[in-house]
Length: 126
Image 1: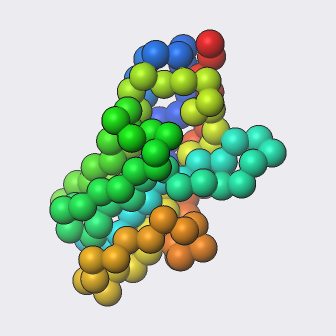
Image 2: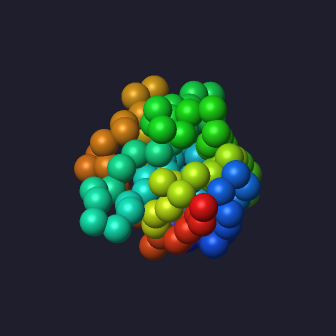
């Protein structure tokens, strides 16, 4: 599966932004999906994940209650709705896919994801 992230930009703190990730291929619905981010000088970190079926989501504590991950398997899309943005959310955001084997386990470790998009930059000004 190939991934293309979009939707990043420069926004003010307290506002919202929605990131999109378009996936190629007919088997998108068999992949768990994740969003990760990497700030300058920092490691890439987990943001959110969603099970292949869309039935379960997980979030990093830093974004819980502000960000929402969702997917549309009919459109081969995954989204990250980001509300109440903070300057510390500034980073390059990446979508990632991991084949699910129809299992419920959805990893948060970036090393367990097989496919990555190119990243989209989100800059939040104070």
